Amino acid sequence: MLLELIAGLLAWVWAIAAFGALIYFVLAILSRGRWSMFFWAVGISIVAKWLSKGFTDNQIRVQFEAKKIAEGMSPEEAGQEWMKR
Image: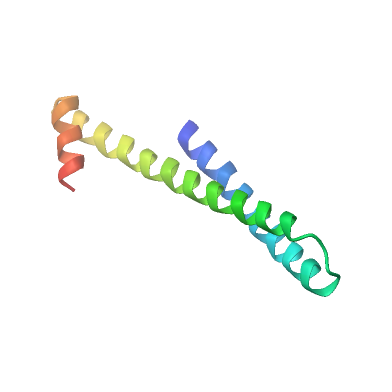
């Protein structure tokens, strides 16, 4: 549940930063604003998206391994089964 919460928060950060990057891009072109704000927003957006995907993938792995352990596999075998897939 914690992984899902963190992934959700990071997805919101990604969406807000991407929207901010769009706004800063338009401002930089139309009003000769600072490009640094655009690049910061793009960087934050990229990192937040990457982290969100990582937490989501980790959540899926934890659920998969818990299911396999409930079916009778050892934790090591469940981890190896995940790596095969």
